[in-house]
Image (tube, rainbow, N blue to C red; front, side):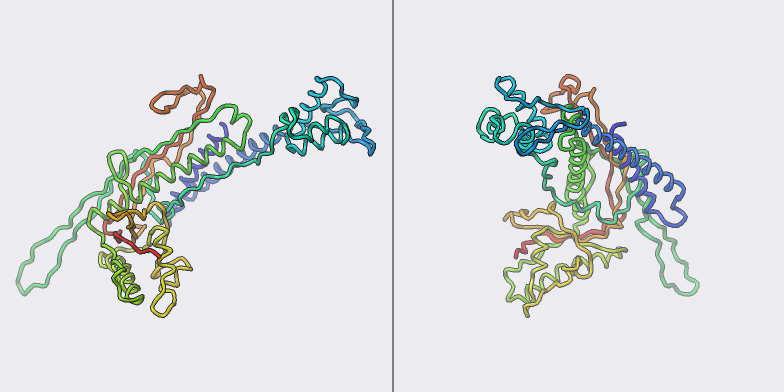
Length: 440
């Protein structure tokens, strides 16, 4: 297997290990976990070996440059080497000058313009015409020498993902579907008098359905880019696909619209039960203390609702960067921070997360946002296959509705696929504030 396949397999194994690790007590399968761990360790060794070989292969071409004395006379090498050399003599012919510049170009592969210049100084001396030609930057010879480029590409700035960081309950969907029975009502009890019969009452049940939805991304690279390992192209393409998938998944699970082909979202679950409150408009508050009071009431409303619905487990807030900055910097009537605990990562005793997936341009005035409070342990992430990465140079991929052949274009297509679904054990596990216009 190539590096892409090896690393994709490793990622899938880690997903299986994570699912096992979340079990406890008798449910934890220690032997299976240890077996998966050994497979990951074996893959790590194979991946490391392949990367090491590629590095050695890149360094296999060796260039030895003979030294020179102070009077620019070259010193012959002590022994025979597999090197590229040019006889030290006056370069009168145009072909010879060109050959010297080509040789300088080859030397410059590891040192850019300076590497080429240093090579010519050692080879022909500082006063030689070919050295001066290279020093003259604008001459035709200088264009043969490559510019210096870093061995990395500056990464793309992306939104931080949130949903997967929450303590969701992850369950497997081995067949792509799963039905979970749920009790939705209980028997009742009442006080009765002597010799009085009581009517029996039954428990009520419904079910939660999880059906895997497919998320996919495809990219392509030229064969030359991968073969020459330019900027670590293979790893860069893989990491870009993984990040792209994570971004789309986070966007959908937080505020997306569910359908037959896309999972429901945290917002949709809350909207389904009208578990939302319009945040207070602070512009009408009499003073700073009044503003703080309104904000505390709104945040307390969310907490109260979750407690009244008997939602167990730890809860968290999710908000936009704008809301976070407002709350962090908000002062009370005495000029002190209203929520000093935010510097330690909590708000009213609950952990909070910040996401750019929550807009600040909602509402008719395009200046509104949302703040969510939820119990992550009451949400189910049904995973069917983890994240699968595959590459091919014999298939085809689609661009703008047109099929492109990898074989005909000598390119490689890399595909990422995951299949999952999302739902809640109890829909009451999330409430949110709407129409949040809090701006510092």
